[in-house]
Amino acid sequence: MERTLCIIKPDAVSAGNVGNIIAHIQKEGFRILAMRMTTLSKKSASKFYEVHQGRPFYDSLVEFMSSGPCVPIALEKDNAIAEWRRVIGSTDPAEAAAGTIRKLYAKNKGENAVHGSDSVENGLREIAFFFTEGELADLA
Ligand code: GDP
Image (cartoon, rainbow, N blue to C red; front, side, top):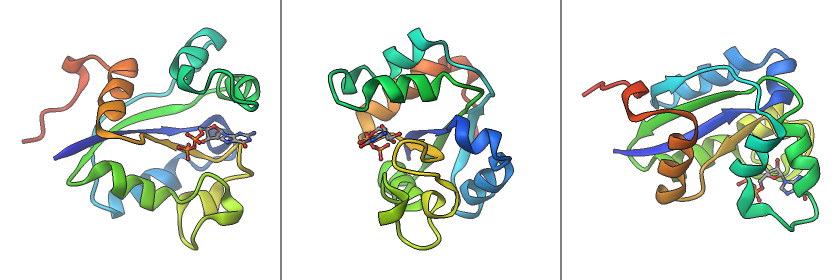
């Protein structure tokens, strides 16, 4: 079993798509280990995305991710990293495959509805950013 972090981003929360996105998670057979709604401070959003520091979109990404509530969700499934990235689609909704979450719900390349971890190591680090080990469900 592998773990990944989903974040339902502020654009999708404010558009009322939390339930739709959770339905994709469940239909695709992911197990939800932990979930909450929270509003990131600029400081936490900067920290979460620090790997992108220096990229041209960094400031707008931090601004956007701290602009309203988001819903971090720790997910588990075989091959969860690749599977979740398949379900969410390409970063830019214009390039995302039909039926993917970003194709269905993203506004643009920046406000793109959901986050997905890009490696096993980052998935574990990102889950630990939002949740303590004790908050993760033991579903075995
Ligand atoms: P992801 O792994 O598909 O989320 O994409 P990246 O790791 O490349 O980028 C992280 C996040 O930064 C993306 O999900 C977008 O929210 C944002 N982002 C990436 N590229 C751009 C861009 O060219 N313009 C803007 N405005 N935001 C971007």
